[in-house]
Length: 449
Image (cartoon, rainbow, N blue to C red):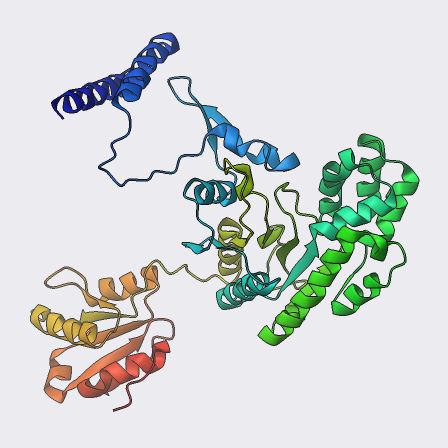
């Protein structure tokens, strides 16, 4: 134990030395030498079996080779010590590695504000349908406008490329070209496939006949009868699963928001089955808005082979998931608020407790406490005698919708003056009715006693 404690102290001191050299911007040769010493000390120290600690770190080589042509979206950088680092493109690859390292075969994961994944062996299309249901619920609740979720299947794409005459070695690069059809015309995509990627023009034309089709379950049924596509095993499996998926989506009540789109390809290499992508249906001229060029606002799919890449025995764990484009959604919301000249709310506060005269701090504290106890999100300015104008101005700047104003006359009458910040309308509310009135105005559930 004493020997281990001494080694831990040496590791700590050497780590501090390395950090100090980086801060001082010492030469990369000196930093590399000291990092080498640190790594040797850590190797001597070995793992501490008494500590149940798990830290997930993703080496750069783990990320490469999983994204296809989208690997250009991985940003490489070096720290001051010359160590090669990468900014993760997404969390799917690290999540798959986590499953493999911990031998997990069933898990449902929600990453705050962004990702949702289901891992495990389940009956076909049930988890996939749930992911699409969640995606639709999230986008509907955000109220950013009408949207459409495009779905396809990598097996259908691969089968389509095979019957059109694309060689196996060109599948992924042609897939990446097809994925651009939501941004550029078919002619531009064809020129890229033929001129830059060496595809024969007649092969590109055959692809064009398929990828320009989109629809619902009727298109799935039509392609199941296609004399060429229906003879391809992969495509047939994908079409069968899509038909089942549409049945579940109908039961979930979201089939009207889903479109089977043969041009959807999703450039990431790790997808193996169903893929999907949500796009906004921008209406032509909304109150001074500029056209929104934000692309998809959510996307995902099935990646059944990714975990096996990290498992020493190659054990596969089927996975399906989705990711929400938080940054893109923020840009949409900000643009629309600017167009409507609305302020962004910087607080969840529903009501500010204000005073109209001096020496009413005690009354403000009593009232804000009553509102807190009733579950109302309330606050007050941390001043003994704030000016009423300053309190109202604070509400406007922060986007607080209501002001509960206490004055000497209100105290005598047993009422609170409730003011709407936007309309500036003021009404007197009996103190015992204030909570219910605030809940009514803010859309909170009323108490039924």
